[in-house]
Image (cartoon, rainbow, N blue to C red; front, side, top):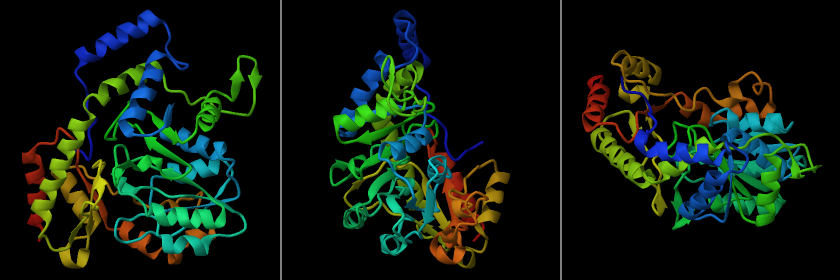
Length: 367
């Protein structure tokens, strides 16, 4: 069976010494030594000033919005995993969906400014598949209108723009360390910020709002990463460059094999960007290819190749959001079209060349 992604599992014998130290330290959670070490090593690796680890990226998004005092309306994308909008819902914030651009399926800056109202307090774009948003244009709009910017950077681990970490853009960025991601702590995530004061604020929020042992400053949440996951993350960090290189080679092989297939649109690497190769999306044009995306999805499944229609359906079509005025499909023509075309092919470090060739030969066989 070939799945869309498989987590990298470090050798068990390398993990055992970490477990032994946890038992010796007798601290399982609550900012333990592995937690502190991982924050330091990740900040150094990613090239960011301050990082706060979380139990998962969804709690990171929820807390990021709280940390900045965001309320009212937030402009965001319908083309994302539903956690993006759920984080707004949990903060009683109204998402305002804006259409995406056709090049890399990120939030379209040309559509942002017209969606701003007196109730708008922030923009929350997503670096879709790790491809950077138009960060300079988003900043220009946000500065002009006095808005906060929180990036859902779930896919953007290790991604750099002109030599700088993509996670340094915006007021805050939230990255995912879920098991399906390039870098994993099994479950997990982090908020990247720019000042020690903001990190202290975020750290308090993820620990129930405690300032000290007897003082609660605000209603926080329990979103701490435990020592077992931090240890796993330290071990994963030793391999992450090798994993990214392997994923890059697989992506290049897909492009070589599928480049001339009618009706299959590929996404090229953006110049000046160090990519993380989180996913390998393609767009299926039924008229040129001959099959719809959904038919190809099922036919690949019949061959034990499990792809993912990611992101489909659009968040704006789900029941909690479908009645919002901004969720009208007429407002989201590009997102609506591409959500029905996108297919993410298997991409993980251990995927064999023979498997890539098999996937591509099956795709070609329907021409």
